[in-house]
Image (tube, rainbow, N blue to C red):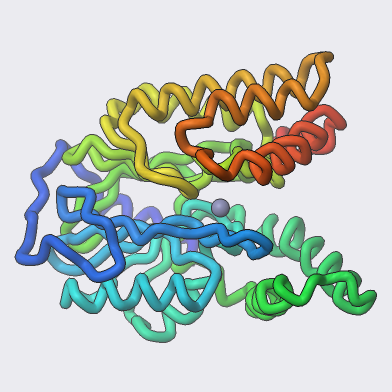
Length: 325
Ligand SMILES: [Zn+2]
């Protein structure tokens, strides 16, 4: 499987930025048209539930490319409806990282589109034996003790089923280093951040559209730091800022222009610096909620509670293990 990459790279290197064929379809049901034959299927984060990450559909001349597949069946069904309106085969699923809110939908979507090839990093190996195994053990214990609220039961059980099928998530084509690749006629630059939001985060720069699809390098209502190296994440954000992108598609939350992204970046940097410092964690959370207020809106109470949790994770140095090579 992994030896396929060399052959793929040799075939698919892109020598220069290409133009994008707009195609016959501009609107897809349940999706937000971003222009340049690109659509966002927004994720969600209902109170008391687990989130779905955003999915992005790109049209190539010979097929569709899907970035991330969400967690819940409702999300992957929305993606599939949008894909259906494109009337092109699903050629590629690209996973930005191995959190379940971005990859659980791989299973139903691959079943519906057996010719689609899955692209992702080898960090699946560490995910399966590391945080996914740990999460399953914690969930099983909490289930046995009756400590899962009724509203959260379907999510917990669904995640356990996905983790049990974890080996099926393995990518068909592993990408661990930056590559320019033509997916079904669509030229994209795949970038890799090491030790950022996860052990390896894949993000995409679409040079022809000047758009960066960054997965969980940008999240709302807070930075989801569960498996993150904060300093590595900051470095990756610097790479995104230098990419030339005019538009940034986050893993969670609305699309940003480069000025919005710069403001999010500052709020993130300040939150990490505060949590690494000696002031109160409450002041760090307040700083985050103020810096990201334009996106958080009415969600301030939840954002504050989550920022408190992640601030504590940073200050306790529990995340530092994710920074080791
Ligand atoms: Zn996510």
